[in-house]
Image (cartoon, rainbow, N blue to C red; front, side, top):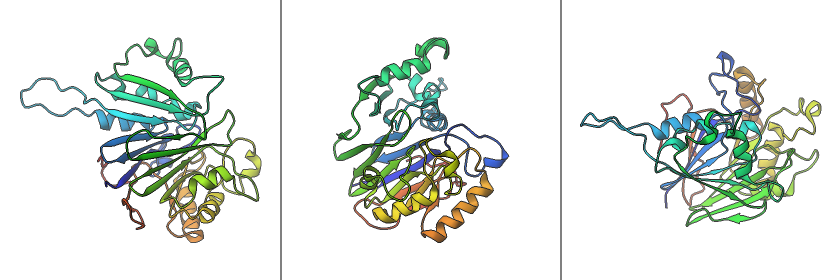
Length: 305
């Protein structure tokens, strides 16, 4: 059974934050690539989806001199929710313009009042996007489900889902494959003094928990009700759930590199092995093994597998 590989392409929340103050951790919004053997799963479609798409669609050189064409892609994209910072990478996902690409987009927070196809049509429709999506050449399927459903996107994979505490709703995911469990839980507000049982269940014993750590505990009271959590609560959650490792994720736009460095030091002291997600960080979760996941520093050359 193949290992599970996880690569971060966008780790920021709310809005992109380009510039010298965020160059090390990155300024793109949420997008995480997961490889299970030859299957490609993508969690959220923030602005980080664009560089992922460019890497996937990079044309191979041709010896005969004919112009290369972008290789088609087969992928599942699982959305936590449809707020702009989690979907605005879709119109700029290069494989969507390549004939032969097959994309399945999933969302569990919209029914019964809305559908995912309807939401994306608004995003890329007139007058907000040129062409209204008519330039797409991919085969795109929209798959709505209800939070709490257990999905089987491919043989040997189980994807458990649960509702999150976020304005307009959201979906948390737990992917199980090859004896490995990955929990992707972002854009959710914690319960002060306790734990959301849905989140606790998704995170239970996970090899890696990617969690919404937008604020610090000191910042949280001024932002209560906005649907986000703190890195300290993420550490407490990981400990209570018995998750092997926590990735601090969905960084607030005001958290620059020096602040995230401080959070990384404090989190390591609070729970050794905790990491702050950065663009380019790649983790290998060994199949059917309890070993601590190996990591590739984000400043290493990009590695697609």
